[in-house]
Image (tube, rainbow, N blue to C red; front, top):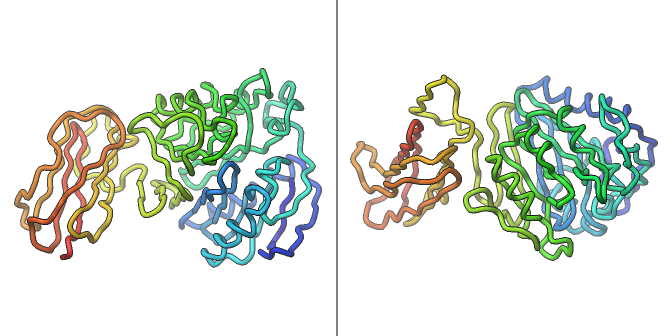
Length: 377
C-alpha cells in the first residue's frame, strides 16, 4: 500500500515506492479526514466506472484529493486521467491501492503493494487472513460532520474461501450513510452482520458488464434491499437483478456530494437527495425526521413537453401527486393510488398547457413536499 504526495498525472510519471503499515495509514487517513472537518464545505466521492474493477476519487472541501484504486491496467490512460482532467485535477495529493490485484493496482499508477496483514482495528489479526489477497484489503471509514462513508476494497465476510473480516469490522465501522460494496457484491462479501451494523442508506457497486464472476450476486442485492438500502450499480453486470424500486443501474460514474449533512447521488443527468432537503409538511408522531422520503427534482428541467418526476417512499402509503399552476390551480393529477415503499417515477406531459412555472406536490401519508418546474415551448 502506497501513497504519493502531489502525484503528476502523466502517462510516464512513476510513483515513489513507499513502505506502508496500518498505523501509518491511520495517521494519513486522520490528517486527510481532519482537513474535511475544518471547513463546512462540500465533500465529493466519485465512483468512477472502470467496469469490473474499482476506482474511487475523494475530493475534500479544501481541495485535497485521494484516489483509492485505479481500475485495470490501461484504465489510467483511457479513463482515469481523462476523468481527472475533466475536473481540472492535474495533481493528486494521495494515491491508495487497497490491495495488490490487477483490477485495483493498474490504471496508469504504478505501485508496489507491501500489504499489511488482515488486521482489524481494536480486534487484531483476522483468522486465516492469508487465504487470499482480497483478505489484505484496506478498509476506510470516512467522516465529514454527520456524514459517514465506508469503502473496503475486496474484503470478505465468510470463511469457506476467504477470511471473515467483515464481522469483526462491523462494530468498528458502525452506522454509515453510504458505502462502496465490498468485492463487487460477490457471494463472499457483505454478510448480514455487516449490513445490519452499517445500515447504509445507499450503496454503490462497482461491476462490469462482461465479468465472468456473476457479479453482483442476487443474495447480496436482496440483503441490501431488505435493509432499505438504495443500490447504485456502475454497470449491469452478469449476476443478479436489483429488486424493483430498490436501485438503479447507472451505466457510468456514480458521484456522491455532501456538505456534511444531507447528500446527493448523481449518475448521468439524474440526481437523488438523501434525506430530502425540501420537507414542507412532514408530520411524525415520534418527532423524528423520516430517513428516506424524497421528492426529486424533475428531469429534464426546463422541459418541453414531457418531464419525469420521481419520488422515494420509506414505507407503503396512499400517494397523491399533482401539478398546479403558479396561482395554485390544479392542472393535472398524476398519481392517486396506493404505492409500495421504494422508488417510483411518473411522466408529466405538458402539451396541453402554456409555457410557464408550475409546481408539483406529493402527499403520501405523513409526508409531503412541493417542487417547482419550468415548461418552455
